Image (tube, rainbow, N blue to C red; front, top):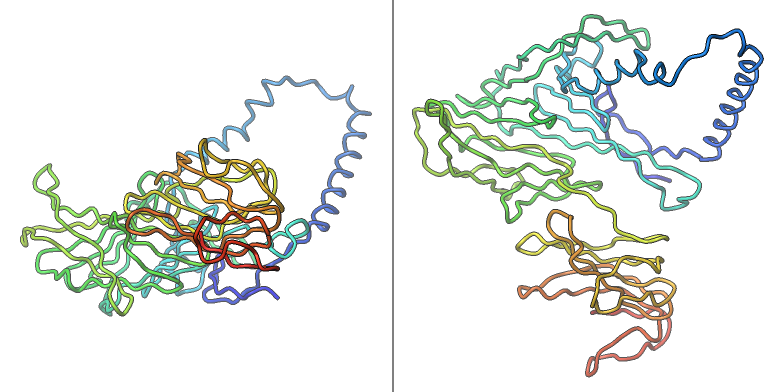
Length: 409
């Protein structure tokens, strides 16, 4: 029985849903039916081909549909006003391909969608999943005013389930005014990314700012000052707060950093600044700074990840792939058995595979965790069934006593 997930549907708050399994047999049946209809249609079309004027490849490439698609792709993201098409809790929202963001008076809700393969039977089922986390301004004032600015050209009409709402306006900016005395929050898009500014006006107290999160497994600040929100699906990143004051046409930088408090709220520490001017805190939401594949021709499983002080990323797991990528002069460049442990090192931007090796014997070997010490040495642990799993001279146990054995390397 799949786990329950608490998530926001497109227009429903706090609904419980099950992760849905979509049988590929059903998909295959639908495809067979679809292509059967296409075959009949093409057969009929062939009989009438002589009565239809021919058209050129150019006609196909320059259709109005292509032009419309190009225009749609050029539209900047926008916020949509709720005029009754959504529950009254939602004031504005953004709907994207991979999720949505909902703005209520009390919180901002982030819904992310993840298509993932089922571990139980990756060859027969697909697993569709949605994960939600929430951000709110802890201790915000009751009289906070939420409004929209920067009206966009797009106007939407909504017709579904008996609900008809027309002329829905769209905006480029959402403003939470007076979340704390003399402090506002502004949400907007830049480079197609959702961003927010916290603006401290004169007489505003930066110590009032407390960000609280729900639906987060772990909340940390990394060595670069980024706020990391770990969910069971990904790590959402709030970039280190770029903080400044405006003086004429210039921006004067102000020192600021995130602090995770004992109650799991987040505050912001400030350096000195001009109390007579606005202070603008300018972070950016980011859920995917970099992404890469690593693997071979068969199944590859990641079980551990850690980074060093310079941002290099170390991973471990196990693989069935005899062509899993390894690097020259690595400890072991050759696949050994049923499954082998792998240990790999990436640059911080995931652009370079700096090192990668197999570790294993002739049977099953699987790593489950990885760690680094202060000198940069890598430690892994897991279990092995291989009687020839590599060991070093003088260690505690140099041979497999039978069955599954724990290893530390």
